Length: 66
Image (cartoon, rainbow, N blue to C red; front, side):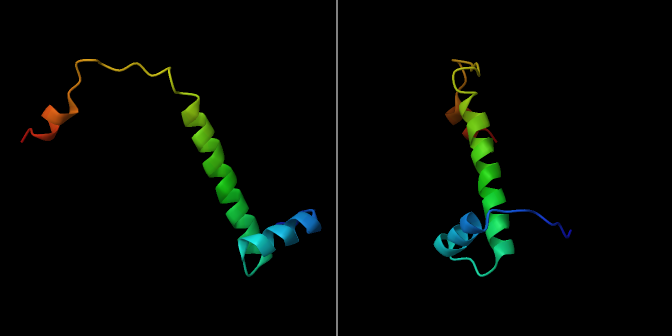
């Protein structure tokens, strides 16, 4: 999808250089992927201490079931 964006050229060129990308498109796509990964990781971090677990759960016993 073709999109016109007003992106800060200084930031884009710096990201292009330090990322070692060949094109601005590759740079922007990589930045978007990293942004999404970071947000997903933050969502998981917020779950720490909120997920209840069964203290009787024995993953080793389940591994040996056939």
